Length: 111
Image 1 (cartoon, rainbow, N blue to C red):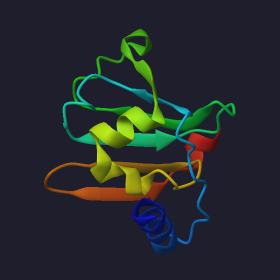
Image 2 (tube, rainbow, N blue to C red):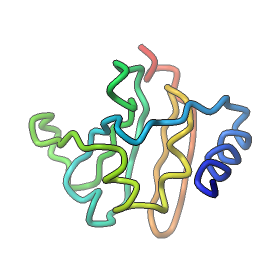
Image 3 (cartoon, one colour):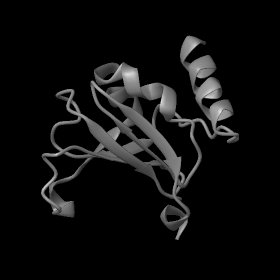
């Protein structure tokens, strides 16, 4: 329940209606996400089995074939500190590091 409440609060900060990911949906990640590096994320409109979230780190080499598709629940256990952002709707982006956090809406992510 705490996670859901945190997700709702994050959405409220930005006047966004939450779209909660489901634990068995998939998320696309690059190397370094599981290892705790700073994450840049974007949520694209996606098929139902996907959450829409794509997360990359500085280790991402711009080769989409190097990306991994993982279940949301695996990421929830590996990176619980970023889960509160995952109810932000399609078109939202965030950047999270040890030193900063930035969340914004990007109209281009919807195209």
